[in-house]
Image (cartoon, rainbow, N blue to C red; front, side):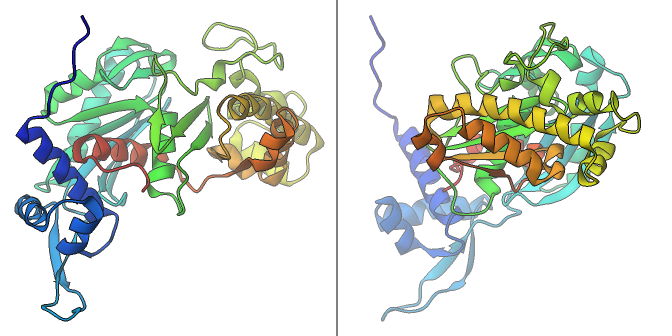
Length: 389
């Protein structure tokens, strides 16, 4: 017999209402208790009690008085950016980057540690070393928890990295490992998913309810936001477009298959292809320089890579009918010609009505996007703050 839903306890109801109040204050810079009551539908008495709790733990502060509407001027409330700090990590394939982030996505301290060939347990130990260093830098400031963005197939519900090939991690319960060492709440997510959360949470307004963020670097992945929530799929693998085989390449991928999108459209793949015609193209910077210099060989490689990526994006447009697609990662420095190749192939591969309504653009996110996104996910889990508004 299926389990029937249970009536919420008083404690659960109070926790839910407290999150409602905190969200209302967080997204309205400064606001009065009366306005919070109006926005949430709670009584003024309930709001006053819940605000008192939030004031006591430092998640809300009083910031002066607002204009009077005839009676006593209302006291205004705000969520202080430094009311809590969050540790955000980006576990890249050659360097681990981490930061202490405040509640508004500002980086207060940062740390980078090279992998130097480490993988398996040694790489996991480096994660713990980085977190220890960031917590030390944060000193006595209150830490809300730890958000981790990592490559590979990750079950965010359990904090398990099922597969991260380059780090040689298989079914690593990273969340439990970190929580056991530091005793703080932990969220682990795929790095492209974390990047999408950063774009939605801290990107420019207005923030769309539905969004696809495609991150291109050493690998290729997409983060998908549906109805303001991160969509991870039944097995947490939504957006793993880098291992689609589209018929555009013959190279062996690190996953063991031949012709994956990453072997054609990732930054290393473009560098490798361009180097066959121009031996001076040895890294991403040289590829970008060659592109801006108008090197014909580089332009051909970049155009082909863009077309293949555009085809992969077309599958998501057709399946999801999402109107906003953002591109982030080092290849954005290749400029408009790369973007146009992606757009033309994507728009030319879907129903014309879908193409007409879909915008494919560069995202606003910088190099710290995964760290900030991982921190934002932790904030969402622990404080109930909505992604976007």
